[in-house]
Amino acid sequence: MATGRDLAQLCAEQFSKPVRMVLWVLAEVAIAACDLAELLGSAIALQLLFGLPLLAGVLLMALDVVALLLLQKKGFRWIEALVITLVGTIALCFGAQLWMAQPEMAAVMRGYMPQASVVHNPEMLYLAIGILGATVMPHNLYLHSSIVQTRAWQDTPEKKREAVKFGTIDSTIALAFALLINSAILIVAAATFHSRGLNHIAEIQDAHQMLSPLLGASLASPLFAIALLASGQSSTLTATLAGQIVMEGFLRVKLPVWVRRLATRGLALIPAVLVIVFMG
Image (cartoon, rainbow, N blue to C red; front, side):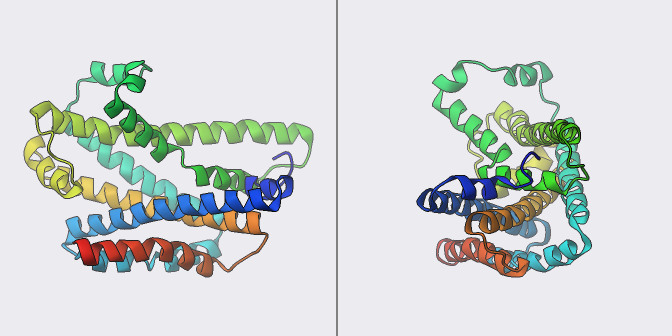
């Protein structure tokens, strides 16, 4: 807001070329790693919902570049509306599952309070780091610093301060909402599986299969798969946009959206296909 430039552009201005290149590579690795998880998650969701083979699902998900290109032509607000719709779908699905699972709310509230055992207990620490990493992804910091500039604000100190205030509220609400969704996954799993001593369930497919019979609701399993698909698609949209900001800011080059998207998706697609072909 103060400079009119995003975080990647400011890094490119302030740091030497070697530092700039290291930061760029780290951001690209983070995007590719997240995209791999999103790609596989979406493919698994399609398999659970429609019985589609994993390899076919991975290849099908690679075509989402077309949808993004069409949306970007209509303007950034359309992309925001799609992401909000997808995140809302996830929230509704897990909200319904929370209602079905009936967790012990007093214990859930205690779980939100900071406690020293999270640091001392390795298993708790790994879970906490996982939730934090799923909520605050490094490459999205670059994206957020660019998105705020799409708002309608005037180039005066007073209006900039106002824009910073509302941008802070916007980001805080978004991250808090993401935290609640990520913790809902953990709460549903604990209330459904751990409370019954089913600690061996570690695969997404097993969790999907067991949810409906354990919760006594036929909708529980389909809702889980729908949430998984919506999650993969919303995350992959933001990863693509972050990739554009990172590459254009650090390297000071402007690539067509479809080239950028194919590059990001290709980095995730190759290891995903190799794992599925050779490991099943």
